Structure formats: C-alpha cells, structure tokens
Length: 393
Image 1: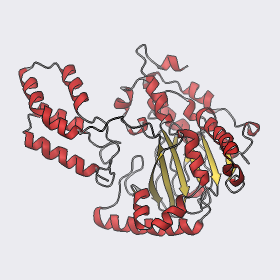
Image 2: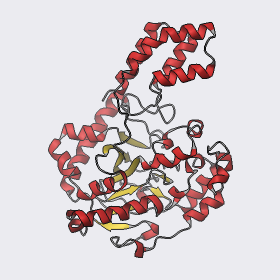
Image 3: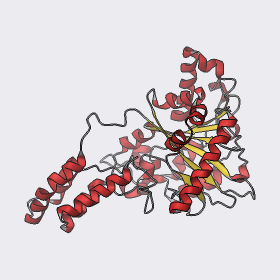
Image 4: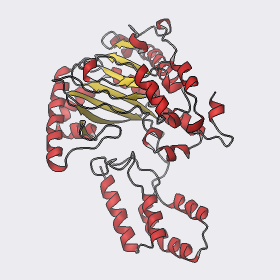
C-alpha cells in the first residue's frame, strides 16, 4: 500500500495517496481484551480511570506494563486515549484558569492576542508558552497542576524519560469555529511543498518525536467542540502528504468522533492522528484546554553552534562567489545548509507567530535572501538580530 504512494526515490506523493487504503485502516475497532487497564473504549477511544491507576503508577513494574499498553495504542492501535481525572487538583486548575484569563486579557490589550495554526482568525484566544507563563506567575499553582503521575507516565510511555514539556492554552468561545483536519508537529507544521522534501522514512520518524495532549480546564460537552479525532488514522504512513487533500478531509469530517471531557481529564494522541478542534456551538461554554506538546529528549544536536556568527562571517564570501557565478545554485544551497539554521523551531510564538503560514521565517531563508538580493552586511546583521530577539524565551 505505502510503496504505491512512495515514489522510486523514496518520497511520498500526495497525488498517489489512496483514500480506500486509508478507509481500510480507520475501519478497525478497539478490542478491550487487548487493553487490560482500560475501563471502556467509546467510539474507539480507550478510556482510563486516573484514580484507579494510582496503585499501578506507584509500582515501577506495573507502571512499565501500563506504559507499554499506552505505547501500543499510540503506535499500532487507536492512536489516542483519555485519562479521566489525570489532574485531580481542581482548585489548581481553577487557579490556573484565572491566571490564563488574565494573561489573555493583558496580551489582547497589548497586541491583539496570539494567532493560531489551523483555526480561522478570531475563533479563539491563545496563550503561547503557557507552561513558563504559569510557572513564573504562580509557581505553587504550577507545581500542583503538573504534579500528575498519570501525565508523567503517558509522556514517558511514548517518548521515554527526560522528555521536554511545552504547553499552549486554547480558549474557544461560544460560536468559535472549528479547525481543519490536520496532523501536528513536526511535519504537520510544514507546508505541503516542504513536507514533500522529506523522505518517506522521516515521515515515519516525525510522530515518534512528539506527543500531543490536552488538559480540560472545564467540563466540555460535545456541543462545545472537543477535539475531533479519527482513531487509527495515524497508521496511514503517507498521512503527512494526504491530510490537505479535499477527499481525505471530507472523509474525516463525516467519520470523526468526539468525546465529552470533564475538568481534569487529559487526552493524549499521536501527532500523526488526523484531528481538529471542534466548533463551539454552545451559548455559554468557554472551552479552555491546555494543549501539551511534549518532545523527545533526542531532538537536539550534540554541540552548541553560534550560527548567527557563522552567517555574518560567511556572508561576504557567499556574496562574492554568487556575484562571480562560481557557485552553482545547488552548491550555494549546500553551503547555506552548513552555515545557517534552517528550521523555524523552537521559537517564541508571541513574538514570532505563524501569521503567514505554519512556520516562521528561518535564518537560512534570511541568509539566502541577503545573498540573492545583494544586501549590505549591516542589513543582514540587523535582520539576524531581529530574528534572534523574536526567538528568545
């Protein structure tokens, strides 16, 4: 199936994705006999009782067995599971909600609020880096909020120890519109053209590097638009090539499922799962979810490199070789790749938001533009400094 989508060079082609193959994968059903710790699987979403798991999570051997069960769900099963009462300290959640409301009001007054990757403008309010902002605003609340053995085990189940936690609040008001079906970070945050430049085996790697999650800050009825999910859809290997296609999105819209959540519940899913925030059709529920995006400890280079200094040092030579015509376009690209940072993340999304696409401008793009357009060295230095300032925590 996947080999038919993958071309001879080992890359996925959106035009060769087959909806029937996709349908066959998502037609599967969850067998609770394979999930001894789950209490139910409504709409093919395994559900766990966080309170009942306390003894399991306190025993290292039993905890490892549970984590193996969760990893199988994410890798080869439904791709999503819910932990009821994952954050049992409702007072901490309420206090965090109040702080996030204050942050949203202050940021909207200052700059109009944060943009969203997949929702229409004005549908919601965002708090980028809600992790650090809560920690700095109320450390005691932060500690109580994240002191959840269930959440820790879910993250470790997929990513192993020493994972990197990040979080972003999404507040969807009554009347807020739904997102479009998508996959998530890494490849899900690239344009179709950029995603297509990564070989097929990297499409397999991308969802192994992150875990998506969400903590409900209020009771979330289906009418208020909890995340729309398509269980088993992460199994479609060319999904990063397929999710923008109209036929795949149409199938998602007619076959997705949604589960109501209660305050303190957490949902975890593979970033490769087709999903989208739902429309808030209620008159009075302001749906707040703290979206967790947890990264593998391995997503980092071995050495620290000052690439800004490299860009400035190499720029005169690049300009000279380009003007002389002594560097073919492919050779120039090779040099740029060795010099500059070619990836948009991590960044500070308050200052460097996804306003004109899924990912902000990169150092490599700035350097390439400076070479092609004949910028002065001081102009490049100024643009690099502005980028570095936007990316600072």
